[in-house]
Length: 239
Image (cartoon, rainbow, N blue to C red; front, side):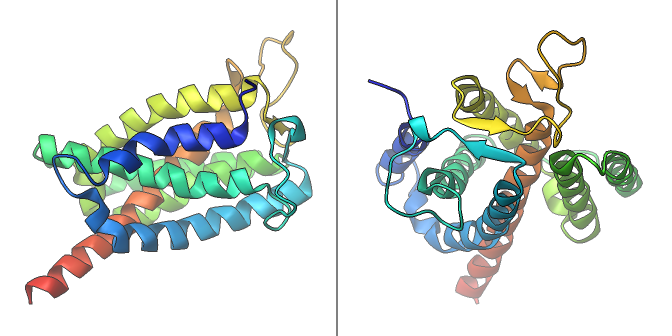
């Protein structure tokens, strides 16, 4: 059986979906903040995906896609589903962390985060001619600035950083599959690219380094919006 993009989406979703209903806590009851996060953040990243696919920053190998007879603005259905199954599954990881490990506040320095945001911003502008590079770095800069300014609690959360770390393990596995088969292909002019023979290949194994920054900002924004709406709705219930 040939591994394809839809199979990967299903593998990402299947276990969190099953345990949403029979587990130590009722994850399915968080559907409102989860849906808000998927619609808001997923909507932004899908729009990003549509634009850069149209521009040719990356494209998809149709050998590993199903022909549904339509696309979403030029991106395959499997790619659009990616922005649903990933937050559903990764936020499930976060909720498990909160259930099994009481969250702790870690040291926070607003200036340090502002400096980090500025570094990502400046680096992105230096590589302005690489379309994916600049957008990936600017997305990290935007998250760090927004979180350090208005949502400092997420940066102070130990479980947020554990969530990022564990999610990155899954990211390495699935993104390696996507880029090694390859299901997703990248324009070398849009990334820190090159050929395998060069010293600087611009990739970790087969994964473009830009994907690490993209993944960090996406997972971070998903959780930020999820936490915001969950706290908001929990507060309204208690009143």
